Length: 529
Image (cartoon, rainbow, N blue to C red; front, side, top):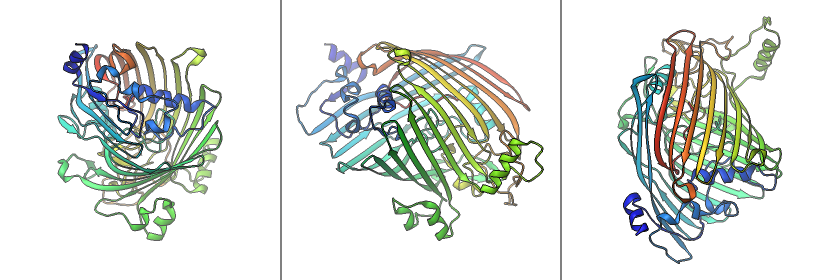
């Protein structure tokens, strides 16, 4: 009777077998993987954001994600797995200080996982999405000039595809065709590649040998049309395709230290991959130079050092373009503000991250903490041709703010078997653009110091972080979740979100949202904006 009621309520069924190459979607299993990666007892590659059960079978069990509460049929086959379960999220909120302002968010779908031996897997999670965007996100999107909130562009009142088809012909080689997201990095944010933007089509090759893990992704992204210096939305069928290739190499040098290298190339719309870009093991800069190409190339690095078995520091550095001599001039100006030489070259484009995270602090199981500082120069991720900005569906592929900012973001949480208390806070200073100006924050605008036919051109020199309309943003969120069933697959949550948006020029906003919700914990975590 209990299982019949479960079926009626959740429309779920599962066939439960041993772990194979199915993706880990459960948020709390991902925490266990990241916690184990910090331990100096393990050599792992946790900076690859997409995890598979077969790669972490000594750390997690698939039975946690595939709870017996949803299981109606069990198959004793040793070779295959089939699992079907509901995927849903409902959230409703009100601005305490303004009764006319509200928010709502609704997603309903189905997760279907199937795998055969340790060779082949299909994971499908299509869902219907509908929402009412809260005012503070509407205001922020308008101010930032691009979609700070990832769902605004496309998936309102639509069915969103989400699938992965994975084939592992050998233990060291994984091939994947998907519509989804990828992330590289150990922090809350990522300057390399984050899961901020909407899903995109991609083909991925991933290999492991010795203490090295390497990934190459060929992806198809969507680009917004650009006219008269303003970005505008056009029907989905009219969106322009652009293509990207991502390479990421992670070396577990020791049980304590991992070093990763990243590179990407953004190829303008209307062109097909050059044959040279199909090579999965090259560096893009030499290829780009040999082709005489003006494609947008980026380089980055990621490092993680475990202090002990429960904590680690991590670092990221992203380089879009640089001239060392100009960088030295920037340092001279930083040391001596009275420096009279040229500094602040517009194409010195870089971003950096420094962070610390700890699990089970003070020997208290489930007590976690992180803090990180993020810095981005003006104009990073943008390009002379706006079609080749580091974006998808008009959203940043890296940090959600874009560029030209300082940010500090921290969080502390306590996870119990039956509940979780989570507090996060973000403080950022951002140099915003004003009408018909480009100070470097909006990464979708064309960036060149010469006349490009747009209503502005950027200054060649004297560009500094926070130039433009300096804006202070403070966001804090307290979220309390209760898990009514085993294994934390379902959560009932409520919380308060405070947000202050104070520009030097323009209208300040202070908002206080109270919200409640119900969700299955297999969707990506919500970022703090």
